[in-house]
Amino acid sequence: MKAIVHKKYGSPEVVQILDVVKPIAKDQEVLVKVYSSTVNRTDAGFRSAEYFISRFWTGLLKPKYTTLGCEFAGIVEEIGLNVKEFKKGDRVFGFNDVSFGGHGEYLIIDENKAIAIIPNQLSFDQAAPITEGSHYALSNIKAAKVESGQNVLVYGATGAIGSAAVQLLKFYGAHVTAVCNTKNIELVKSLGADEIIDYQTQDFTKATTKFHFIFDAVGKSSFGQCKQLLLKKGIYISTELGKNAENVFLALSTPIFGGKRVLFPIPIINKEIINFLKDLVERQLFKPVTDRKYKMEEIIEAYKYVESGQKTGNVILQIAE
Ligand SMILES: NC(=O)c1ccc[n+]([C@@H]2O[C@H](COP(=O)([O-])OP(=O)(O)OC[C@H]3O[C@@H](n4cnc5c(N)ncnc54)[C@H](OP(=O)(O)O)[C@@H]3O)[C@@H](O)[C@H]2O)c1
Image (cartoon, rainbow, N blue to C red; front, top):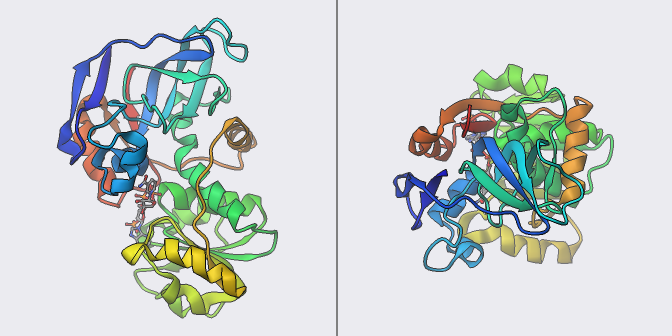
């Protein structure tokens, strides 16, 4: 089978398309023929190993799993002897950031992990981007214990995480102020944002509203910059470590004093969460934003675009027609 392979960590150019051995589903596993995947910041982060710490999961000296692609949508081709939830021919989507595989023609995943049946009306391209940005957004929203009526600011509302965060926050009943580029104002309004700050013409740190929660979904701000915008016990979360990994240290120190604080939650995705996201999609309460679509052969360009920090929502990778 064909797969996008990286045998060493590095720039987008380390990947190549190779013939590799088709995996076989063990007892509890499902073999999926992949039609669509995405190219996202998770794949890019594990491929580059820019943060050395990522190697503790994916291999210290070289990648343990050489085909990335944490998101996938496709058709179940084979099932292991003990698989109960899925059958051959099921249309499925899911997320796997342990052994990956979405950037290959076939992948295997344990049926008890984050895999679910694609909602009826959705294409593979629509189903593949349901999980990545949204589960990061959800983990952060849950950590901040957002309640209905609370004021929340999302900085970077047009990324995969930010665009999911705006929609999920509306689901939880928050009053959402979204910070985005002029060109994306209409998009962000369509996601449900109540207020919009155009970062090209306004400085969001000068806002007069106070917030229960500031979520920097692109990791471009700092707690220091945002502190004066937070209510007394307000919470700040960023998707990046910050300067000198300050967000990790602030997450350890600020909660001690009981006032404004930084959190740095570990993202979680499992069966329950994928089914929750699926339910929101079915009820039309969440729709992943999609941007460009690339073919397998264009993977290097796709990575370069994703790593430019300019994508709007999610980038699709077509694996099969
Ligand atoms: N290491 C990992 O495993 C990992 C995994 C997932 C995510 N992350 C981190 O999480 C963050 C978000 O990821 P993502 O995939 O959601 O992001 P993304 O899709 O790459 O975000 C790009 C978006 O951010 C907007 N943006 C860029 N600069 C901005 C600024 N100064 N102010 C406001 N918006 C700005 C861009 O819109 P405009 O340019 O049009 O404004 C674009 O829509 C990234 O920092 C990423 O590194 C890391």
